[in-house]
Image 1 (cartoon, rainbow, N blue to C red):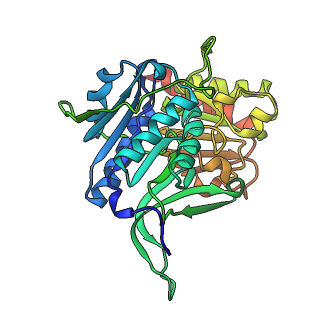
Image 2 (cartoon, rainbow, N blue to C red):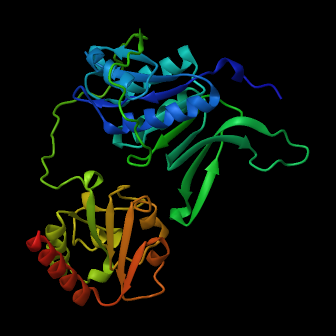
Image 3 (tube, rainbow, N blue to C red):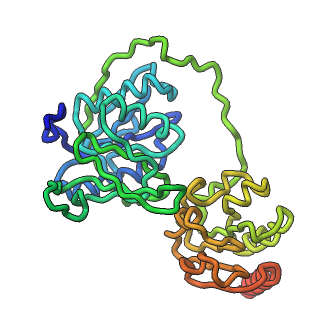
Length: 351
């Protein structure tokens, strides 16, 4: 079999360093942390690809979070995110510099950009990954089939989260993945780190695929980002109603925490989507996670199982949430939550 790609030419772990309004999105730092770990196993370097206009001032930040090298593609056409010029920029970088691995955040921008770029550079893309590691493919040797080493093994929930699939891209490069926010760990910044900088511009000629932006409307929200919260009090269908969430609001207030919820709560219109934890919501890692009236389907636990301490309250003792919880209380949340709130208020008053 003859392939059009010489896989040996492809080297390095690359990260799309998403910036919006000249501010790097935190997903870029998380991906750099993961890229550093993968690059260590492959004995190669980490390259961040920074696309925008007048963005050179962001290079040092990328170096501090693990980039050995930054390729800057700067052009007035790249000031705001638009599919066509950004796809042209990133696919040109890939064709010119030939990365072995290309990681993109599974943000609104990344989910638009990743598939377009992978199609242009004729490689596969594993979307919405939650685990990335270097290993053998096939993972278990099959007689008569070559087992390739040092492959990127990309793991993601499949079939609505009912199973976990590990996917490889053994015959094409780069190996591309979009990765969920909040799943990978950024490194502690290295204060005086510097990266090699390459300025590259493939040339931008607006064509009929360039969208014209007429207006940018920024949504102003006073909702706290649950991904930043140290303590989350999360409610599910078992809370019963939007009104009943006030029990959780009171507990969260006593703890200095934030309320979040499961998908069923959003589907019922009790809480807004930005408070949803889970596979179709946000991935969170608080120090303490209260799961109240949440059964614990895999779609939900995928978004919170990395929490330091999980406390479940549910009247159904067979609920799967108890399998991931550190502490579990079987009983009626309408009785337990107010008692818990009162005790915490007492403890606060005694301080």
